[in-house]
Image (cartoon, rainbow, N blue to C red; front, side, top):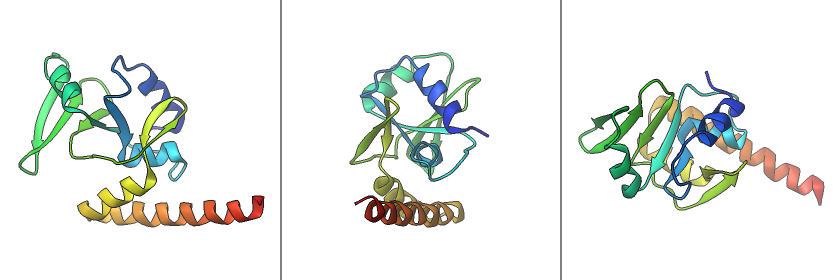
Length: 137
């Protein structure tokens, strides 16, 4: 399992332009503080980065659910998944991370059992954050 520190260390070692990818899925939930750990690092990516990735020997490209491209870096916990589009990116520790709202929206679309658990965790986290805002004022 990967902690926030593990994710940060791994992402900062990437040699790709930060404007071409963003952390999403369970790893983004860890970065936001919603979860403590995750099993892998999910990254959304641009078409430009996709073209760069498929030229590399250490990448394995899979098609999921018909037309969703997934690229795994060999000997790594990193998975690039092209259907994880986001309309808002937050920079956390210098790393582009999908917003909680966009992650929740995607997880509602996917509607897997694990997604519903994550949605519940996001809602609980946002509720706590909102309560903390009122206490600070």
